[in-house]
Length: 170
Image 1 (cartoon, rainbow, N blue to C red):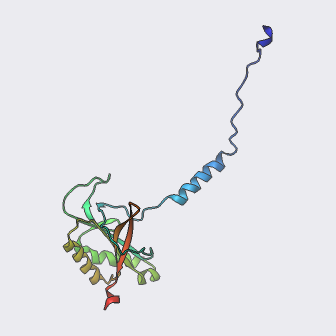
Image 2 (image 1 turned 90 degrees about the vertical axis):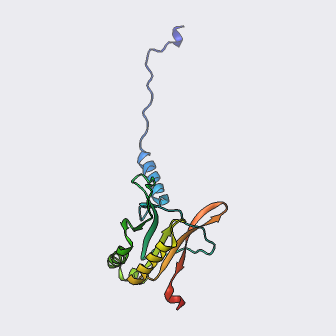
Image 3 (image 1 turned 180 degrees about the vertical axis):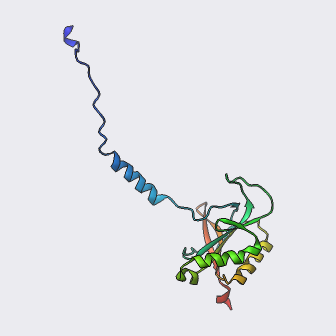
């Protein structure tokens, strides 16, 4: 019986941490590739309408206008009338022209030439508000307008944009 007794204490070997930095940087690199950075934080809640004739838009010289119900910091709807958000600021219809000029002055010359305003309006927004926004954009000289909508692809909604330039139709 003495033969099976151990007089030494066994220890668990140490964990080799040499590969840990490689693993951490690999995971970090993966998340950097797949993460989509939001350009504008929505302060209004909107659900874009569905469309059939849609195309992707380019990103250079793009200004976002979101129209919908106001939300709090956690994204919960607050109720009340529709609000207009231009990039990260809530604006009134009268302020749109000045804000467009301010955004245009911050852009490079090539982006100014390709300035496009992307309107993302809630599907229940009154057309009077959208028409007022379009009139202010026309006064500000922002004539390239992109309207966001969704289309169903295999049962999934995909947001796309439809562009409108009144100069091309005259």
